[in-house]
Length: 104
Length: 104
Length: 104
Length: 104
Image 1 (tube, rainbow over the protein chains, first blue to last red):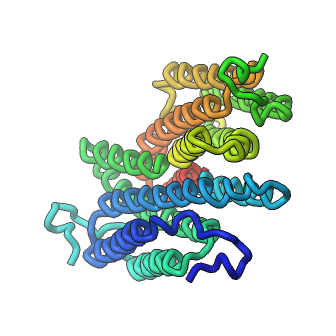
Image 2 (cartoon, helix red, strand yellow):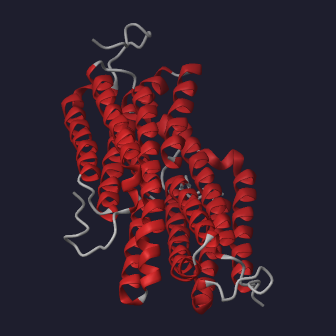
């Protein structure tokens, strides 16, 4: 059940149509986290572990960019069409999220 | 069992003394990946999911920086002391890993 | 003269009201680039140069985030209100720019 | 004249042999900063400005990675060979600089 009714949103979140795709990507990322533990357990070479960390970071960033895309296409656009202070608040919230991503 | 005997390294990898600490961090990161799946399952708000993705990316980068630190303090320094072409190769390998991290 | 007439935009770009502020920031960034040259000329310590490079990178990212904010608040919102394929194209273009920033 | 005598370093900084190359790259980056000012002056399209900001950020990161490479190959390696607490301090200093870069 979506929480959008509860918090007063009148539509589903943007990513919901692609929910299965996001879950698949996140399960793969979870698998990468487990793979990293196995590498440390088996005392693999640092540089090989670092290569996997970079791959996992890129996979996470792709999920973030896809979420942002869905969010802007749905929530931000809907708020923009509705106009008023909520539109401004949504845009501020989205650019704050972008700033956190660019700096993380 | 370490693979350092197999690949001709004559010492343990730098991170081994802190192995439990790395495993603990990676288990926490794995938990974050599972938490993200739960958020998508429960159709949480995109921006809240993105905040968790940024936190997870930062946690991964901290692991990477700690691994690099251990790697330089041990493998690179040992190779530097031994000198010769292996020292150069180790440094090249480390800076390539840094470049991948900075760009990922 | 704005190029928005030329390319069919019916409004000024979002950043134009803050033009002087952007120019001031970019002049400061240009000054940082010159400062870095002076440090190299005077053979300053690598780590001190790197600290300045990190500061300059952060300043550039702040400009990018501010530009994106202005762009989404104006161009993307206006396109969203107008609707149709141009709205979609604008959002795609904005998220591509975000992806380049997150990965650079 | 290098400042390494002054601060007790007994060798030139790593980047000095490539000084002209660094200056050339930094002059190009300074030119990019001026190009960005021109784009804002002429009210170019935000997305085109952002593309240039991403290119400039990448150029800066390449300079940083090259400086780190030179620094590790020279200062860190020399300190490692000398050993003792200075070696440790140099490695700590280098990994702190890496952390700032990865996070910036």
